[in-house]
Amino acid sequence: MNPCACPLSADPPVAVFEVVARRFSVLGEPTRLRILHTVCQAERCVNDIMHVTGLEQANVSRHLARLYQAGLLTRRRVGNRVYYRASRSPDLELCRLVVQQVMGVQSAARAERKAGGPISVFPVQSKEETSV
Image: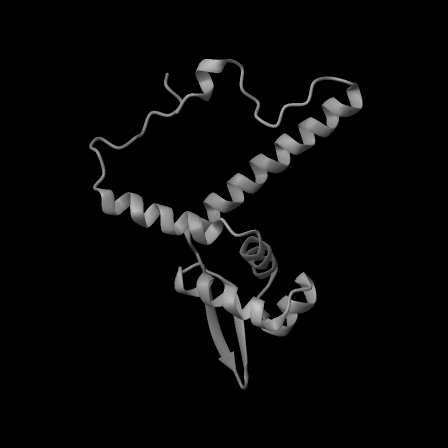
């Protein structure tokens, strides 16, 4: 079975690929991933996010705006504070799965290093599997 086989029955229109690329661009920024991780733990205001991440207010606010516009966060105002929390988005589940996979690969690499075995960032068995 081809691991890259797409489950779609027809070729998607170009616009679909553009939407997918935009979603990945939002999740492709490490700072936004750190903020998402923080907000997924608990609903937080900008000051709380700054404290947990060590980021500056302007940087946090800019990334929060992008995450909110992408539908990854919801927000509510209480007085002069705005509280953010993770929305119920399939994109967040995809992000969680990728993080779990990367952590698993890194854990396996650490175990191999301790055992003196070969270290591979890309656990690929053959050259053919690397072609896209």
